[in-house]
Length: 300
Image (cartoon, rainbow, N blue to C red):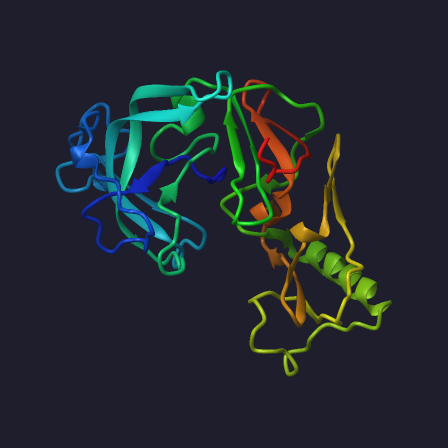
C-alpha cells in the first residue's frame, strides 16, 4: 500500500525476473473478467514508449531513481472486489478497472518467499493508471498500520471522515519504511536522542565499536538488560500533534536500540512512524490529512 504512487499492480504468471512469493502468481489470462488493452489504444493510460510488446504497458521505479526497485509489465482491464463494512460478509465489485500485471521486477530485496505480491497505489495523481480510490469513485480513504507483521493492518476506501488534522510541511508516504528529515532538522533530533539516553549512562555506538548485527541505521545504542524507559516523539503540525510511541520510533534487538529515522534532502513521514494511528486522506476537502490514535491490530 503506497500513498506515494498511483499504479496498482500485482505479479502475474509469466514474470521473469519475479518477486519471491509464498502464493502463486496471478493467472490473469485464465480470469473470465480479464481484458487486454492494445499498445497505443485510446484506453491505454501510459505513453506508447512504455508499451509491453503489443500490449499497453507500464514501468515504475520506487525510491532511488538509479538503483531503486523497478517493475515493468502490461496494463489490463479487470474486475476488482473489496469486502464491504456496510454489510458483514458483503463484497463490492468494480468491473472494467485498470490493473497492472507485473512481469519484470528487480531490486526489491524482499526475503525469500515473501507475501508482497504487488503495490496498491493510493497517491493523488501522476504516472500510470488512476489510483484505486478514484477508480472506485471515492474521494477519501483511511488506513491504520499495525506494529507487527503478524496481524493485519486496515485500509478503508470511502467512509467517514475524522477530526484531528494536519496540512503542509512534509510528505506522508506508506511506501517509505521510515521517516526522513532534512539534514539540519535531523541533526537536532539526533542530538536530542543522544542527550536522552545519556542520562541513563547509555552512549551511541561509534563506527569502531558497532556490532555486526545492527540494522543499517545511523543512530544505535547498546541495550542494557531490562531497560524499558523509552521516549515518545511528537511531530507538531499546524492543527494537531502526531504523538509517536516508542514502538514507532525504535528498532530493537537483544543487544541494541536503533532510531528508525534518517537524514535526507526532504522531510517525509514513513510507515514505521505511522503505526498505531488511523490516517484518513480526503481529496474533496483539498487533500487534507486527518489522524487519530488507534489499536490497528484489534480484530473488532
